[in-house]
Length: 43
Image (cartoon, rainbow, N blue to C red; front, side, top):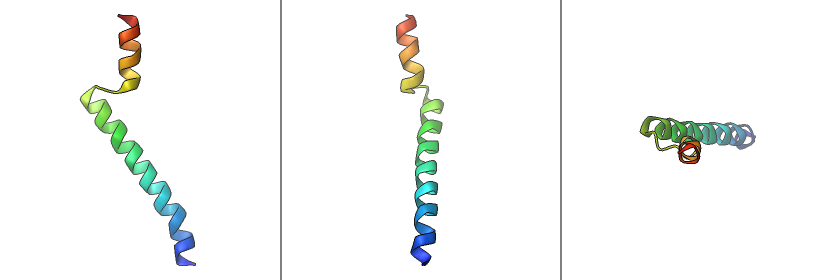
């Protein structure tokens, strides 16, 4: 029962944290693939 209520919560928090951290690092470094794609196409 405990695992059943903790599984989805841990998964959501884990994914959100990883994705958020990845985006934060990418944005801070300025090497985001999303920001690099349009830049190269515009050049």
